[in-house]
Length: 97
Image (tube, rainbow, N blue to C red):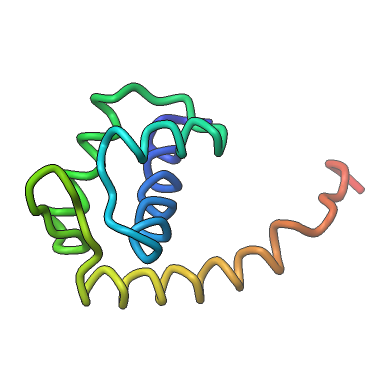
């Protein structure tokens, strides 16, 4: 998977995880690795900072929590993912079929 696409998925996962509990770099990195992401600590930190700059997360100390804006963004993402899944998870026809 391309790095830019992976980062988008990783950000979505981080918003989801932030609904459950505050995120810390040391806790979220192994969770993302368990989900199959191949990332370094630096990449996870950058994504946490990006989500904070976008006002989806707020930082307090070493932890990050989801904001109201982040909750609304996640709801919009869920709606789009619902539509996307109904389309892209269907079996793909062979080229020229």
